Image (cartoon, rainbow, N blue to C red; front, side):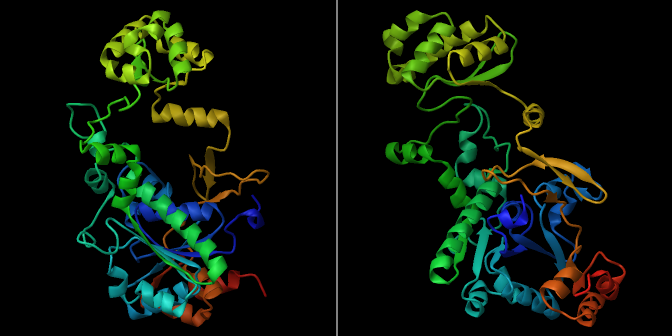
Length: 416
């Protein structure tokens, strides 16, 4: 989309986050048009070096969550570095960080002090357990909050050990809630002129994702068992195997869908069987029902059942691996995947799933090298002179990836 069409154009976000929860949030804000200035330590976001697939010198983990950003590398343990950060924060609309509670204050930039200087500033903090409370000082990662929230106890099959979700839900959900809070705070600021402090807890995010399972548990006082491939309330909402051993899921949620399912598997009589006459009876007698359905589905390959149930308007889908799913997205050419190209490298990545009718998507900018925009931010955005910027680089308080230094950078800038 043209930059003027992006909903968050003109908003500056100071990104003090690392790893995943915060970077996923700021990437989303950047995709929506905000100017993201990623503040990194002199050694960089630690996710840059995570083991596994990489492109060039950067880990795919880092590249997955840091497009559409600019990078400035600052020594936040130095007085001069903190002076730069304070100046940057004072120029921002939004600050987002995922340090442990109290770390920013110890560095010399308490959120409350920043808001005292800039009452219209929006400051969002993501942490494992919130800014206050008995657990606030504990470190947390995705798997920790999945475990503590009960999410892992629901994942996997009965009798098997608890399983971590295969996606980083603890991190990503916290990032999404942070963005929701930021957007709400922007709306409130439009009305009142004042900013907000936003506190997002990864653990609370996972508790919120329990949804009906939380209420089931609060009402009954009984913890739900691992869900396997089924559902606690709907007997015909689970996975099955065709005769070829391949899995597919059926979600026959309504009475009409149930009756259509009976017809497709060649057992019309099940629709009037007293054991399965309605959803409650089907749930009570689900094990007997599953045995009948499993036997029927074993008579033909899974592709047969997917096609037949689709034609009968029963929601169904093959269980695909990630490579297959991404291949489908590529073939669909519907914007689910985007190309992220830089000067030396390019990759394909999953797009933000938000589109605006009649508006073209803007090409994504490649995740920045460490300190790639340090000189630009210092001089163009913060008003440091060339000599001041060079002094910060020479002292080691600011790192740049430009070995030519500030004066050479100045010569490259357009006149006027």
